[in-house]
Length: 346
Ligand code: SAH
Ligand code: SF4
Image 1 (cartoon, rainbow, N blue to C red):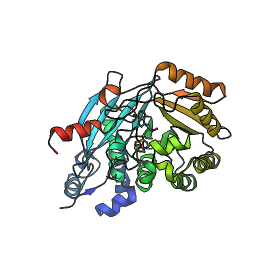
Image 2: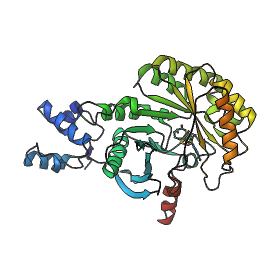
Image 3: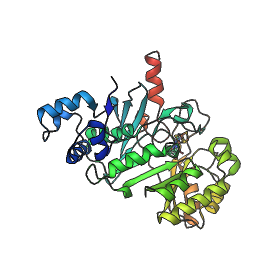
Image 4: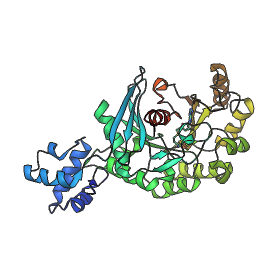
């Protein structure tokens, strides 16, 4: 029998899917889901009979946590196995101030093929459903308590799965449910221009990060195939539009790879790209991925690059290295999935 999975449904949809006549029942169940309930059994404001009937029809989880990995620096990575046996990874990051951020995946794998990214080496298996996105967040909260922020920076390109992300955000920000503030949500894209306009025009109103990596057109096309059809001048216009339309400063991210995109000329191109738009720049020293032809930058290389940008008046932050012992840092997601599949002979 096909089960109904309900973690991605809104109160009125719950009523429809579960055949509930009284509207407030949908809101009651929705509230339980936002509070982290994993079964109807926990919903003590429903009668025993009602709970039994609903348990027959539907489930609060379509996926399950198949592995929990903890880095001594506080980063936690969950491997989440989806209902079709595929798996994604989701990460809890804690910053120096103790703020907790969920870094969730939106696709199993990724089609964008960025040359420096582990996930990009997997190819795309499929888009995630809204409930599969919501469930990652709820799994993390079950593991580590209430979270402050959510970033769509896990596996996959969020702007290639915008409908599911929109729905997941509607559920997570709904006042009768988890009631997360949309100000605390960030989506990171490799630079899908159409999607940036769509998000700017149709919402939700969230923070945008763009993985610029480099403002050198030729190099960017080489290492980020998305650039071949979404070139830099048009990307820049789209970013400016987003910042203007939403009144939100956009983050430009750059994974720094030794000798590739860290030189003086690279810095100057980035300054030129950023000038005149409301952006801040987030630098991420490249995290090593086995088998890829890149090298981690030295501390001096990173410092020089950072200084040039700062001296030009740009707002620059350096991402601290986190979660590296568990393959949970930026760009490392997917490695443990490949390893465990190999071990089990898949
Ligand atoms: N697909 C989206 C979001 C996930 S990737 C995107 O590309 O924006 C999250 C960030 O990690 C991106 O900024 C990406 O450029 C960066 N990244 C990818 N591989 C990396 C690596 N090996 N080391 C450091 N950062 C990496
Ligand atoms: Fe996909 Fe982002 Fe990795 Fe590029 S960097 S392959 S878009 S997950």
